Length: 241
Image (tube, rainbow, N blue to C red; front, side):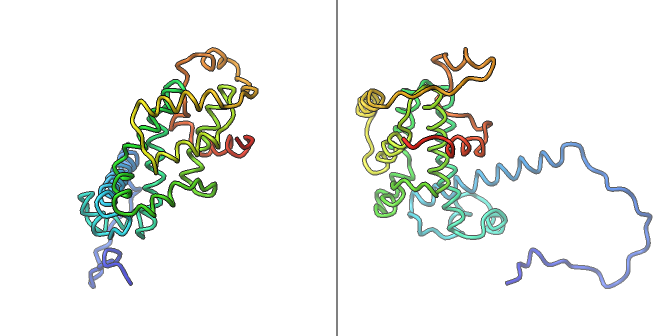
């Protein structure tokens, strides 16, 4: 069906001839437009999260738009289907948890990630409304972008720390989708987990990176600026944990 917003209305009378001129570009206009699009997309995903928390995954596009405080047409400019919204929502939530751990020591990052999963409002909503959907999400799927992002981040930090077991850690984190825990239980789990992870040869540090790699304040997870492609490269080359 044709979108009425895509229709071009033209006058029937020919306009008077005008001299052509080179287009004038406002400095920084593209950057501002990109920032506005990013803010709108973030608002849409926040609205989707709020809608899923209340209604589960059987949400309507109009409900997402209303939760985000935007017009439905604006939502369709970013996402064409409900499934596209839900897919991006999962990846965005994983990315947010990963980015929140940047700069933390490994034990703290693992504990905070497990706590974030346990207390996530979308997880709580699905546990109440659609436990079967939550159980499906908790199954680690190597073909799903969210799990790829999570595993790639784990591979990077564990390899840098001379530890293996990324798949074990990933399954451990996934378990909190089904069985959330409080801080004390999570801390005890982290201690047991780290004690059992295998030691492997640390990744060779690049010149100038040795000091930061040895520092206890080194990032536990790659920052967002490292990029998803870089993380996937480490994922593809690392041995299974």
